[in-house]
Length: 86
Image 1: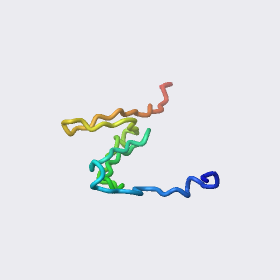
Image 2 (image 1 turned 90 degrees about the horizontal axis):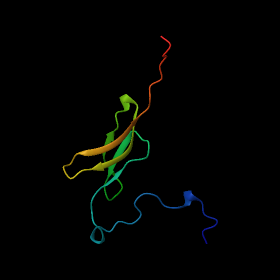
Image 3 (image 1 turned 90 degrees about the vertical axis):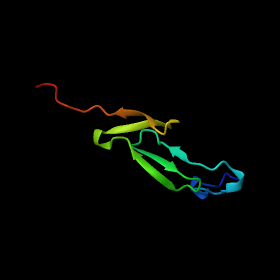
């Protein structure tokens, strides 16, 4: 039945949304090793975007919203290359 289907044949995004049948809220999407963290609503729309210090070449690996409303993020900063011979 599915053996001739490609990944691109499947629907993407929010395919079924019944507000009266679910707990409505938001979802945090923190792609692994990304400089971006997204907050999306139940319809799949990006509500807010945060940056994990791109000027410092940092990547966010994990994020969690705390009860206080603050974010806790595990961030990795790529080591800077420099010439240590001087």
